[in-house]
Length: 231
Image 1 (cartoon, rainbow, N blue to C red):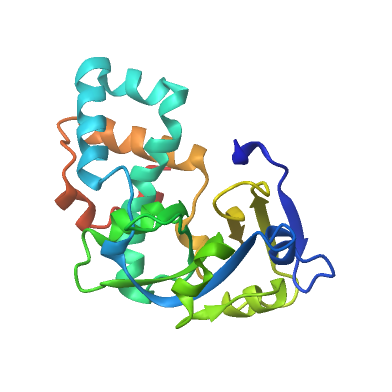
Image 2: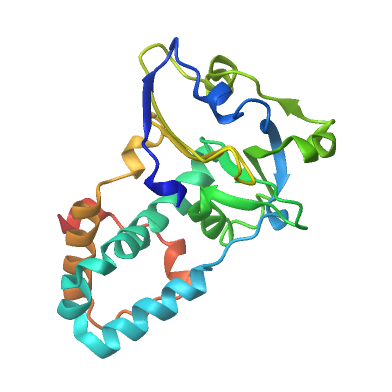
């Protein structure tokens, strides 16, 4: 699938334009909406789902078995990051626009930023998010009231990029229902709350060994853990 496509790595500003490339010669288009109702986005894994998975895995494998299973590491890291993000979003809001897609269904699909929606489950005061919407030209008229994005320069400006900022893009194919599969960029605002996977796994292992009776609940995420104490 599209995640196997080669990443486009560029530095702002850039002569290469992945936004234009994502249009696939007029097949796709891109829009930006600064206030999308979070309930209009479909996503598959709730915060409760993560809690249930972690509690079940620990009960069946023990703390060490749960942590040592490498296939768990991505989701283990998300437990730590979500704890940090819920606190951080309440302090500085959501910094990065999400990448959504519209394929004619009632709700938007999501290609990156899903964890932000899980974080917002614990922040009911935030009801909207900012996001890019990638779709096909047949649906372009659905978005006449929001901003069309036609170049990488415009895209980067929306992201409040500074000179030298690095961006990554993964595009789809001409016959896909949207043009951009994934994007990311480095940000000084989010860097403190985006630790690496190894850091997160090590920290959660130390935390669980100190508090072995921990049962994860959505409410557990409301109280920031000082993860540096466990590294």
